[in-house]
Image (cartoon, rainbow, N blue to C red; front, side, top):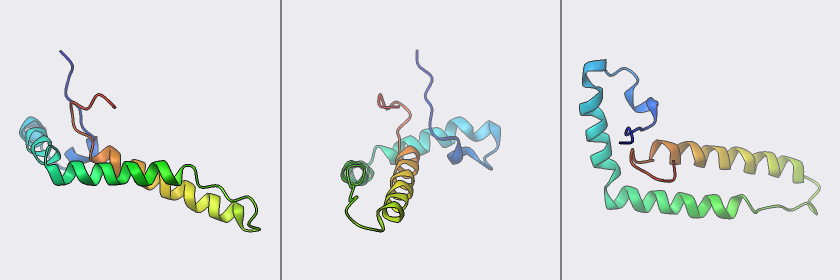
Length: 89
């Protein structure tokens, strides 16, 4: 049986004896339709930003650095919204 895992950030400051109860509660909220829709919106934004290259612009390096930071932030939020039993882990 696969152990259910979520981002450890959710458990920071939670007493160890409350971890299982907290994980159950977090998974309940991550199953919500609204949360699923937010996850899908972020995945769509991620797929378009990863392909956004404009080397004809003289400031392309700055734009690329900005895009890289944007993509990293989206991935961080998606990691937080990842369900414990998500096969895309």
